[in-house]
Length: 108
Image (cartoon, rainbow, N blue to C red):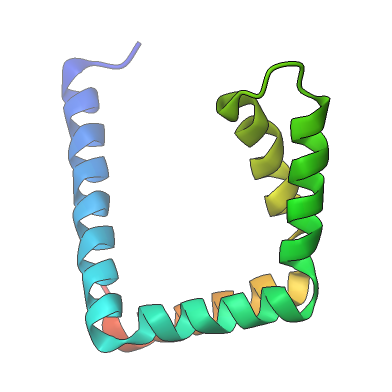
């Protein structure tokens, strides 16, 4: 069982990570990198037919539900979307994000 001190330390780490994430996101938006990377992602997904495929899968899953409910549908769609994301898209976008981080994060 975790002690109160350990829980406080863990919460502080989570808070620090959240603050860092928010600051990086803000910098990414302000620099224009957010929109640039998002545009590249959208084009790549469109070019490989990913969005159309995901929409078809979502429609099929929705039709299978007796009563359409968002939470169960998202429970199926989220892992499917993650698992079927083409590796070349994931790798390219990951490289763009790593490049942004390399340019904007100092070594600890």
